[in-house]
Length: 218
Image (tube, rainbow, N blue to C red; front, side, top):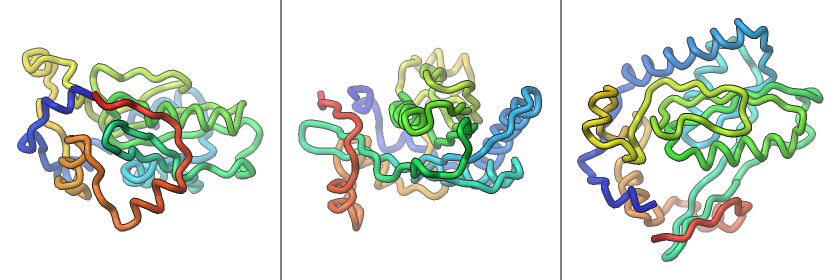
């Protein structure tokens, strides 16, 4: 994750609830148009916690759905590696039928490792499922994702800094990183520096989670 070295604390732009609401409305319209055109019945919304709780709940209400089956993944940082862990999985006995359609929902997709891991885990638990993927913000250079039928996004970003400033400007993509209304910039900045932010339950969460991916630092 050497791209993190390019970040400055001043790069974070605080998004207002009004601006975020407009992004979610755009996302909802894209998902609604697709399911209507293709005659799709969504069986459950699967938000990726923590951030995916916000767009997930919004889409659940706007699409007239009821069932929410959350999953949770989290990166943990040590001195020499970054570990992605699954903290919460959908129960395999969830009553969603033999061939469910899931709407997997994420907030701020950069490289997409968390979301792609969640999609693989869904396929592992429900081999015949179909997965639609909705995300409020997605990096321009990583808009495609394997294992899902369709990808919907509300706004494009350059979080990974793959686009040069000039390219981002031509594509009308903000050069800044978004700090969402509920987020702490302090937490985001610690993460950007590749360090572990200390939550009140960091130790217990890191011990209980199932390791999904280990990424060496450097």
